[in-house]
Image (cartoon, rainbow, N blue to C red; front, side, top):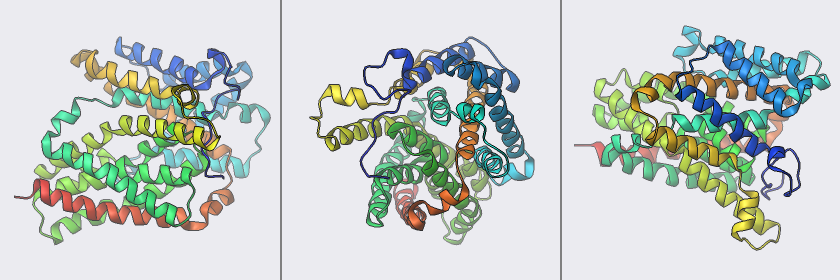
Length: 398
């Protein structure tokens, strides 16, 4: 793929398309009412969530996709059930792996009829999932991290992002791939990669590749990094900050810090939460930067109108959801809605990765970048581990 960024994707390529034909705006229209219902006390079962997804997809893309959407959702449900098995859950293997795997299994063993291909709306599902994900980003959590946690998050993300991006470009990994790799390494793995892919309208096959890298690296890190904390004789505070800044999810941080101590669990969770909150900032900055690059590459003067034309509008829904749920939803309501929001988000992301699997062949994934993206990811992760340790010693060492 060319290094030239693509303009924001929509159902039609014309910039004069109406509001209702723009996929980005449809994602906002789909996501915000769901969040409003959850804030109002709606506590849907998994089946109600899936039914809502199927109805919305059929409403926006036509009733022809309804049966195909049911197949996608059945595979997504199976993936989430597999990921919820205790032995698998303990290893921190996320549902997106099984969603992608089941989709790939279907694409290799079973036919892909037109009605199923029409229902495989991975990009739309990711965008709605990101809008819903915005409600899980509590901006006040930054303040809870305290000054050391805030400083660590502020220094880890941009420095590690640029280091990984630099390594990837030196290895001749394309811009799109480099952005997704760098965002995944520097913030929080899969969720950050999904947000970055949406922000730059990236190739979904590359997102699958990055997701696989994140999860392949996560398992040994969960085991080896607590051992390194103990071998280096680090305090629980420093160890927690180090693990919280390098491991990809709050669940993996909690699992890894258990052997270090209660204080390590507290510090690690706070540091990871501070980084997670900055997903929204990263997505917004990436959207603006990518839009400006697209305008320059197309020979256009980078004016506000050009940026707006290329800006992925669903990011606005993400930001609105984050602000509304951070400052305008009562604390007791937010607490009750927290799990349903995450479950709804996971349903959309699980369905999206099933769709990516349905549209992908394993051979295509293995050929992507000729192994260079994997080397870039590993190089970025090594830098991340070293840099975050330096910061943890500085900010949390006694």
